[in-house]
Length: 271
Image: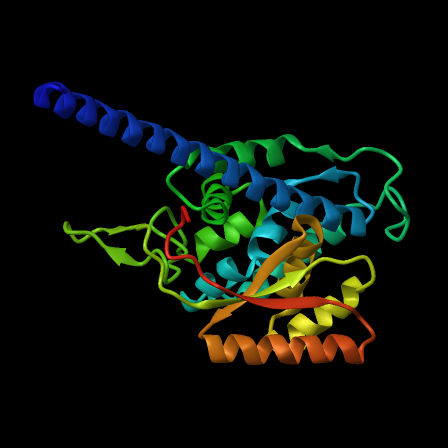
């Protein structure tokens, strides 16, 4: 017969160990996700550099990628920041960088990353409590070595700024906002990468069907291209289904086999 005290202690120890293991696994999962997100951001910035014939990816390329991300541009616009003006300024700065090879030719040499690019990404990774895109924007503001960073600082964006997306907007018992695990159940529209749909065609669909600006549409297109798939819109089930059907129909009219699906949002970030 098992001693009840021993059984209780064994159960308690197992519970503590299980909780500790789950906590470690969660931290590892978050770290891997952040690194994966940063890799995609790197690829978007590098693709923009290649499109302009630049061989070195600089802080301005990173700034373009961050500002073009729909969650960032939407949040900044809600705070009165004219994102289009900032992006136009970044475009001017990038246009001043001489192209080292024709933009239409494939890369013949490996990309290099400037010291500023490395410094900004390290600063972003050190903000472990922040979503990656938010951390990158705050690194730009804090460093102020880029046109975008200076412009955001002049427009009142500081360390108190956050993306404030609905899934994270939860009030704690102390009255301070924190990022909880519970996410409102919505439906996502997902684009999948394929070998035949053209980049320009996908950008056109994102602009026409989802009313994205050209930089936003280009960012999402590159996200789909590099990550294999990406959420392009979130809404209730009826709206998401309608938009997915419209996007699919538009793609077929353009002769593209673009796969567009809808998916129910997770109940928790760890599901």
